[in-house]
Image (cartoon, rainbow, N blue to C red; front, side, top):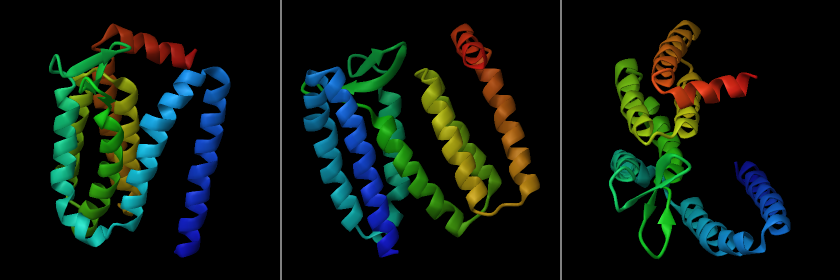
Length: 196
């Protein structure tokens, strides 16, 4: 386990180094901003998470999940919510901006791992998935919705549910996703652009 953690840590630093190097070549100001307001805070947060006792944290995961989902919902409320690129996904605290959906994705992985450890209630799983999807549809942030959907489906598959149950869930999610996608013309345009 310790060896796996080391390789994961090396992978994180390699990917971060490559991303920051590319950013430095493109825009020095953006590079400095990402270092001080992205990489370093993330490094500090990652250190505390790495040292944290996940067994003790587990009981607080439902609170963290719905707290960050609530923050994602607050992005819809002006003037706190800041709309960029057609989607309300940032919280503007004047001195800095924050995108709660990024932390929410991490919390979802931890929460679902704990959820499937205790139960395999498909209805509860789909209900939670529906609530999370609804918030991202309101923003509307389709790419985040796709990423969160992949996380939910991957966690569902990894907990070794039957293949038939997994396929039924994918079919249901695909039908709902396409229905919501075709309700908005710009989403339809993005889908056809991706397929072209």
